[in-house]
Length: 187
Image 1: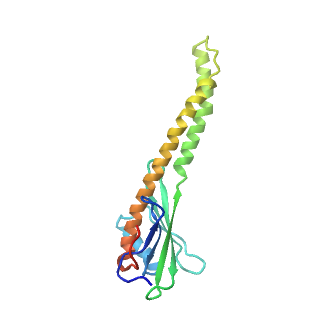
Image 2: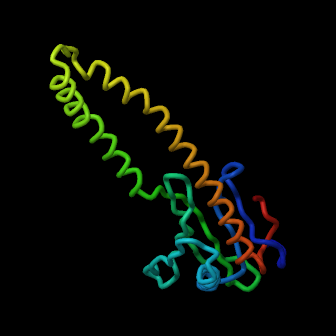
């Protein structure tokens, strides 16, 4: 059994990533209530409680993890944990989820840029330059393909930024619920 009075325990996958889990002596309801109070003070962007599970315990919460331009959600599943000093402890398990809005918009724009863009460019070149006889896709498609590694690098950079923001948010959550935490932090 971990000592009382220390910060909540956490485990992280790698540096810069949010922890996989935190432990607290607070009950699951108290954990989510404290986080909701922090969100009302403007300290947890995008905070939302998750629905209750079938047995009546809180399922958890969601907060935003900002990356540019792709944002993520840090989802915390809160569950009661046995074996704590007063039997009322809880465990918060984290996972990240990409918010689909911006990637869908980017994919639609990319698709609309390729095919209608190819046809429009080809027809425009053939109208304005009567001597134009090249198949436009020979040079147009390679230009689009060359940009794909840059889009992938942007996605990876955005994911790194979101994970760093999620780690900061998880540390703030740890401080909020860890005032009566269980064991030393591994974060």
